[in-house]
Length: 253
Image (cartoon, rainbow, N blue to C red):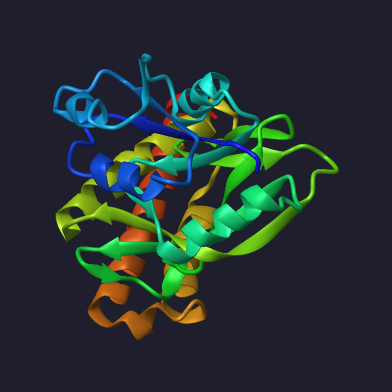
């Protein structure tokens, strides 16, 4: 049986981290937590479990997760966010993979909850995430704050059954706040990478974000929640590209 290192990055996650750690019991052979100097009880909760706990200054999601990856003792790594947990089906899937691994990386479905309700349509579902992988064959990349695992050329990847349960937003207010913060981070990343935008593309991307989530991906089947999610996604898209356009104009571009 191959051993697995679970890696988690945290900041003020006392509300979520216990659920995450409990879901890893009997699955992970070690748990690495990299915290960016929480001011709540995150560390206290983590110390109640058998974890290797580190503190490291946060630069970006991509850099922090790769730093955590380097702390993993085993080559096979399971990456979770502090507000995520393994479903029972996914726990069994990972146990099966440990006994008979046939790929370098595995995608799992992620189910996001809005309050206590799982969202089953729209841009949030199905949300496939590559989270179990051989760190010799891949690492984190992407545009901050939307990190993703990028596998090396030739690496074999598969989808596997079971869901990552994502308890990201207890209330709509939390969703609004995060969408605004992520829009600013995304705009900053795009600006630093030299990306450009114009008013026509800004409006097109905003409209498409809503149409894709609400109509094409059937967000309307989630009722009021589906409309709200699609509207906030469109609003976040507008804010992101509006900030980028503003900064480009200020730089005379």
